[in-house]
Image (cartoon, rainbow, N blue to C red; front, side, top):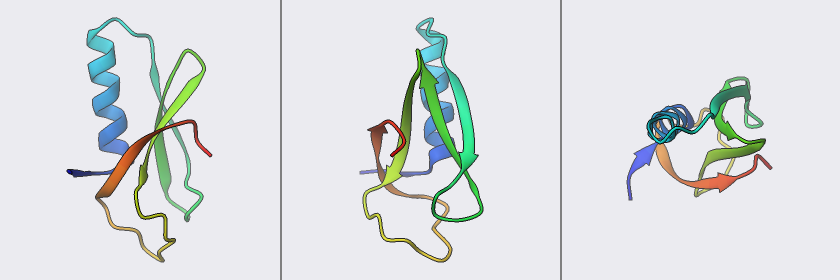
Length: 74
């Protein structure tokens, strides 16, 4: 299991999908965990995000973490 963060994950997915001709794009919003950005990938009106496997709220989350891909942003 590798470690990443939402930015690295979203950019990697964007580049992989772009090579296959997909017309997706990156979305940035404020994180629900604090005052820092959260990056997502959107394609055809569907959001895809990378979220931590351990959802405990931390004062300062780690820059990279073990996570999973998730459909949507809830």
